[in-house]
Length: 201
Image (tube, rainbow, N blue to C red):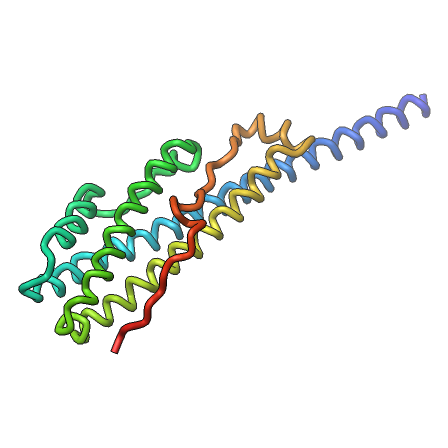
């Protein structure tokens, strides 16, 4: 009788340890996934910041009567194609191809903004405009923040993806419905160092 009771107690203790470990693993997966979502929101915020600067930039540039209209039109067209705001659908995190398309669209807008800044060098009145200078600094800051937040997002996703693929966590992840998240990849041409010229007076 005593041996049977000891065996039952041992089995119950082992089951409690397994269940406790499973609950802890499940909670860790949920915490990591929430971290990915939070970092996703930060990426969204930084893209929104750049998006919100564009109307002010366009308005300031339009004041320069001789400014190249095609460059300005390209920026305005790219922004309108994206809609009124940047709202990243969380399903992009689970779809590598959709995230790549989103990234390409953002890259096109970023390229159009870079061309706008490059062309502005030919307009001394515009370069000396205080509003334009402030917007330029804010836009450069937004681009830097986008790069930082995308890097942080990738780091968070890497931690999540690694965790849910490891054994025995992958068993709990399967029950939790956790699936790997997509990563941002380097922009096209990112391996080529850009030419930098400091011509601001």
